[in-house]
Image (cartoon, rainbow, N blue to C red):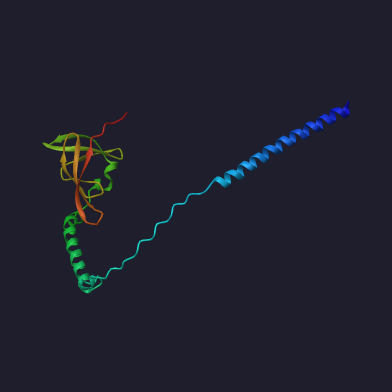
Length: 180
């Protein structure tokens, strides 16, 4: 009885092995067929454009490295420096005010009052309250107070643009509501 059960187990194992190998053969055959049927599609490359050289026509122009060209550039730069210097020179000659040590984004406008008939803004910096009048200077960009009303302080600042020229721009401090 033992021999019959052992023989049956061997036959069953052989049958299963045969099934597994036939599936692998089927898969291999299918892969070969697919490989033979797949053909890559490559688009043709266009012909390169033909280079056509052009004659140099700027021989009669001013040479870029000549003394004449350098002199023109230096005159133009000195004229710009003189006009720029006139705008910032008075600011550099005066004594700085205490509120010019802080950037505008570190300041908070908390209110305004009328003192001796003139508007006065109340500005908070580092938990200290300052009274700002027309003509006072604020911020790091030579800001001068030009207008004070109930909700904002308007300043005229002198800053350098991307080219390096000094220009005027308007900045404002808005009234901030205190959160408790």
